[in-house]
Length: 506
Image (spheres, rainbow, N blue to C red):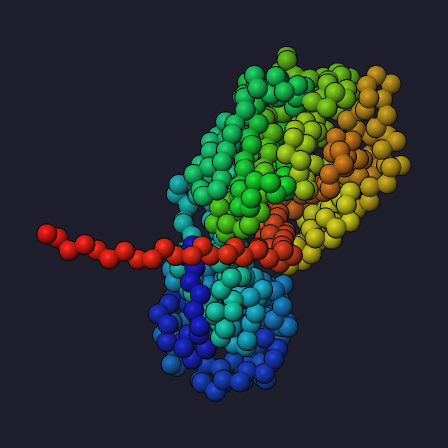
C-alpha cells in the first residue's frame, strides 16, 4: 500500500479525489463548520454515531464531498488503541466496495501516535495473502492518504509507522507461506534479500558450519528432516562499531510435526507458523533498513524442520549443546528451546547490550494469556520495562511472567545436565527457565508469542507480531541513546591559506 501524509481539514479532505473518505470522529467537540463537520456533529448529537470506538455511520454521495462513499468512524478518546479500532472497522466496511484510493482524516487534532496507529491499522485491515493463492483478489486499497491538521508534527511517527508496516507484512508473508514454500533454505534467501538494504549484511551457515561450532542441540532437531538446516546471521549497523548491539534471536522451525512425540493431526497444518519468531526478526530488519535508526542490531535465526524419520532424535536421547551443557530430550516436541539455546550461546560473541529471543514456544502461554498479549520473561528490570512500554506504544502488548528459580526444579535430569521439559504446571515459565541457563550475564528477555503470532479459524493467518513491539523498542532505544550522548567537542578550524592570484596567460 502506498501511504501519503497531508495537512487536511475535513473540508479539504472532502475535496480530495478518492473512492472512500473515512472521517475519524472523537468524543471532543468538532470546531469546523463545513457541511461534513456539521453532519458528523449532528450524527453524534442524535446518537446515530455513538462515541464508542469502532462504531460507524456510512453515507452515500453526501453533499460537497468528491468521494462517493463516506464512513464516519468513532474513535472515542482519540488514543491510539481507539484510533485502531475505528480505522479497522471503517476499512473492513469499505472493503466490500473495492475502493482503490482512500482518505482517512481526523475530525479533531491528533498527535503522531494516533497517526501511526491509523497507518498500521489500515494496513492490517486491508492486507491480503496471495503468494500461493494466485486467483485471490489483491488488496483493494492501493493508495491511502492520511489527513491531519499538524502533518509536520506527525511526519516522523508517520514515516516510522509506514516502515513498520513493511516489516509486519514481510513477517505475515513468511508466516503465512506453507512449509513447502518456506523451507530453511528459502528463509535464508529472504534474509539475503534484506542484505541489499542500506547498512544490513547477511551471513548464512549450513550444517557443516553448525557442526563445527558445536551446536549439537540445534543439529539434533534438524537430523530427522531431509531439508538442510540454516543458521542465519543478520547485522544492521546504524551506530559506531564499538557500540554494543541488541541481539534478536528468532525461532525458525519451518514445520513442526513434534517429531517422535508426534502432535495430534487436528490443526497440525498450523505448525507452519512455528517460524513466526524468525519471521518477526526478518520483518524487524526490513523496518530498520527503512528507518535507519542510530543503533546496532544483530539478528540470529536457527532454522530447520522438526520431522520424523529413522534419524530423528528420540525421547531419552542426550545431546550436547554449544555451551557444553548436555540435554536429555524427554519430549521431541519441545524442540524450539533446543535450537534457541545454541543461538543464545552464539549471541555471546557479540558482547551484546541486550538479547531478546522471540518464539512460538509453549501452548501453556496460550492458556495463560490467550491471543491478546505475548508472554514476557526478563532477567533485567530496565529491559523488561522498556519492552512493556514499547508494547503499549505500538499496541503490540506483552505481559510479564515470573522467573523464580523454583520453576527450574522440574528440569533436573539423572542422565544429563538438564532435561528439556518439566511437568505440565507452569510450562511457559519452565521453558523460559531452560533458556535462561544459556544466557550468561547480559540483559535478556524472552517473548513467548505462541498465542499472538497467528490467528486460527475463519481469520486464520499470521499477525506479524511482535514486529511492532520490537521496532518501537529499538527506535526508542536509539533515540534515548542519542539524547544522552555527550556533545561532540568542537575542533578548531585551521587557518585558511591566502588565496593565490591566478597568473594571466602569456
